[in-house]
Amino acid sequence: MKKKNHIVFLVICSVIVAQVCLAQDLSIGKEEISPDNLPGDEIPDWVARWELARVLSYIKRYDESLIEYQKVLSEKPESFKARAEMAAIIYYSGDKGKALLEFEKLNTEKLSSDSRIVLADIYMTMKQYDKAESIYREHLSKQPNDYKVHRKLAKILSWDKRYKESLPSMKSL
Image (cartoon, rainbow, N blue to C red):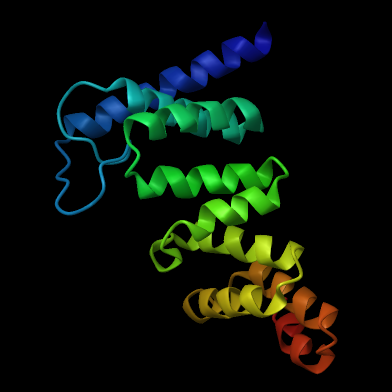
């Protein structure tokens, strides 16, 4: 019972935050419509579901989160951001093969930095070190102080028996 109250509280907080954002009259421009940039003063059902999917993923209830993402995508099948988030949740739920298939359906160049790191993590777990390395290096060129990614890069370089190349990433830790 306590978990249900916690989830209800989180959903209510998400809705309140969304209403505050809507009250500020955000302009959409050419961006995709998402819970983060909705016009108007009412919150559509698909937005509430999207926020619920996010909340469920935060508390690691991945199966329930995926159900909500599927409902969102049934209403908004063109939503790139929702598809990318769902692909990450599929990976977190343990199905790296299916997650990779979902990511490969998307234009990976348009992925957010966080989603690209998840994609690199999938490549790393599938021993596709060259693909993971490329994404990690690109990320580090933009965010050189991301020590978690330095550690991941050092791991895959050492697993690939490129020990000397892994040392600079280890030194930055």
